[in-house]
Amino acid sequence: MLGLSLGRSKESSHNLHIFFTHFHWDHLQGLPYFGPIYSAENTITFHSACSAEDLHRILSVQMEDPYYPVRFDLASATLKFEQIDGEAVRFGNAEISSFALHHPGGACGYRIDAGGACFVHATDHEHGDAEADARLREVARGADVLIYDAQFTPEEYETHVGWGHSTWLEATRCAAAAQVKQLVLFHHDPGHTDDDMQQIVEQAREHFPNTSLALEGRSIAVGNS
Image (cartoon, rainbow, N blue to C red; front, side):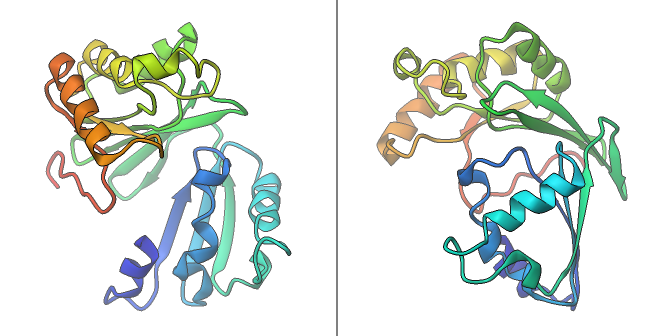
């Protein structure tokens, strides 16, 4: 949907930056269908915690035969690859910094500061690692928006320890401890129905009132935006 939206914009070309949290399939499979990579007018820079060489290899492999009919190296856009080295990067008035999350195989979250607002993206994180939990709370302290992994209910989590995901209850605890302004629950379990999700957000609001669900196509205005 993002690619289609950019394709409809009035600009004839785009300079895009895509930040990967990690490379599990559910966070990667949209790339072959991302229209801007097939336009020679675009320049796209991919960012991740791994080396530029490994990042190029990973993105190439997932588009090789028999997985996809168009090889990654046939993309028409100018493609660049950058490793996140722990230092914040700036794009205009936006500063983006990364931090490690607790997830199988590793993952990173992002904090974006821009226009006097702070947005924290922590989408694949399992609570229970004291160091990682403390780091996340510190990074999110005072944020305008915190997106947090809330795939399981507390009851479901009892049989999913080690799967790399957290609960709506832990999300509210993190949001309260970090004194964020708004909590957005993310990484919904595909087995949950819309009714399930409505019940989850209502339960979460009993612990942290300003809680909402991540919804496809939703936009959130923060700061001076």
